[in-house]
Amino acid sequence: MKNKRGQEEMVGFALIIIIVAVILLVFLAVSLNKSKEEVLGTNEVSSFVQSTLSYTTSCAEYSDEYYSIQKLITECVNYESNCLDGRTTCDVLNSTLEEILEESWTVGENTPIIGYELLITVNDEVLIFFEEGNKTLNNKGSPQAFPHSIDIYFTAYY
Image 1 (tube, rainbow, N blue to C red):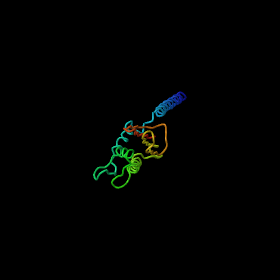
Image 2: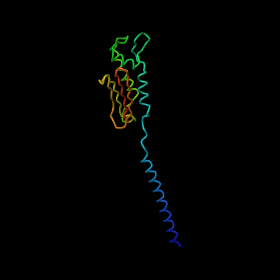
Image 3: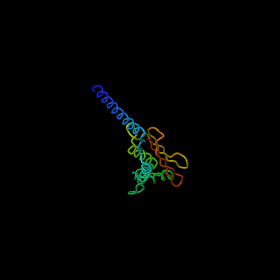
Image 4: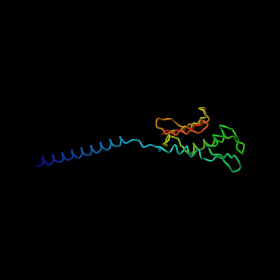
């Protein structure tokens, strides 16, 4: 009778080990097959470009009339005019875009964004080009075309 009871306990222990092993395998399979969550939403990059174009700069055309980025691009391309304070529209455009990019897209090892690239072309010639970080195959981009062959391309890499 003693031997039979010992065998039953060993079989029960073996069944518990098998059940735990199966549960662990299922958990491991599910966690490995989980697809990566996307860091950037589909509209986030496009919204960034649109809001940047609407951003009001410190360059004034008249005493109370300030240029938006979009208007500043056009002024820089067509007229190379000056602001009331004497700065050129192209200089203000460059410095403002650089500030916006640095504040909006934090790039680094401990951040979800690995890099970004902003390209503004006029008649397929580069007007402005900013890039920071590394390029990867995982990216979201937003092209924007304007009259007078002005194109804006922004890509964020994650």
